[in-house]
Length: 170
Image (cartoon, rainbow, N blue to C red; front, side, top):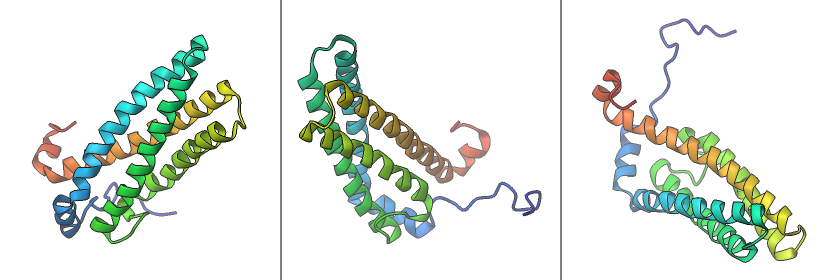
C-alpha cells in the first residue's frame, strides 16, 4: 500500500511543462479548438432540442437526423484537429499524459456517434431507435465535454497561481 500521508500527498504534476505551455499558446490549433468546442456545443444543444422534439411528438425526424449528422461531423472535425493540437503541443497524436483519460473516453463518444451514422444510413434501427442512440451518444459527449472543461479550469488555475491560492478562480 502506498503512503498517501507523505509530503507529496495530494501533489500532481502540472498540466503543462513550460515548453508545452509555450507551444500551446503559440499554436494556431489552440485557436481552432477554442472555436470548434463552443460551436460543437451550440450544435449539440440545437440537435438535442430537435431529437427530443421528435421523441415527444413523433414529428421532425428529418431535422433531427440532419442535426445528428452535423453534430457528428463537428465531432470528427474536433477529434482530428484535437489530435493535431496534441501533436503540436505534446509531440504525440493522441493520449498525451495530461489528456489520456479524456482521449480514451473520446473514443467511446466517437463510437456512439459513428453508430448513429451507421444506423441512419443503413436503416438498422427504426427512427425512434436512431434517436435513442443519438441521446446515448450525446450523454457520453456531455461527460467528455465536462472532462475537458475541468482540464481547462486546471490550466487556468495553473496559469494564475496567485488567484488559485486565493480561491478567486473557483
